[in-house]
Length: 152
Ligand code: ADP
Image 1 (cartoon, rainbow, N blue to C red):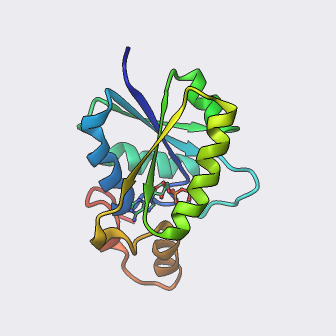
Image 2: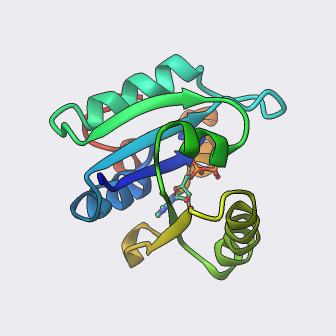
C-alpha cells in the first residue's frame, strides 16, 4: 500500500521553512499532499488560488507532490485521500504543545492516522508566514525567507 502523507497548513505564503520540511519528508513517503486549508474564520492575507499557485511552482519538478485545498476537518480530508500520515514541522516548544493536543485529538478521531513531526533545521526556526506578511505590509523585501521560485 502506498504511503501517503498530508501536509496541512495555511501557507500564507509558503516559506523556506515549509519548503524544507516537505523536501526532507519526500524520501519517507510515496506521495505528499500539500493541503491548503480554507478557513472561513481566519481571513487570509493572500487569496487561496495565489497560495496554491506558488506552492505548485516550488514543487513543479516533483511528481510525488500534489497541492489541493480543503475545508473541514483535516482527518476527514486524510480519510478521503487514503492518507495515513499527517506531516508537521516543529520549531519550538510552543509548537510542540500546540501540535501535541491536535495530534492526540486527531488520533482519537481517526485511530489509523499517525502524525509525523520533523524538527526544523536551526537556521529556519525563526521563519514563519506571519513575519513574511509583516515584512510585506511594511514595504520590506521578504525574498530571503521564501522559496527561490516565488516572487512576492
Ligand atoms: P498553520 O496555519 O497550521 O499554522 P502553517 O502554514 O503556518 O500552518 O504551517 C504549516 C506547517 O508548517 C506546520 O506544521 C508548521 O509547524 C510548519 N512550519 C511553518 N514554518 C516552519 C519553519 N520555519 N520550519 C519548519 N516548519 C515550519
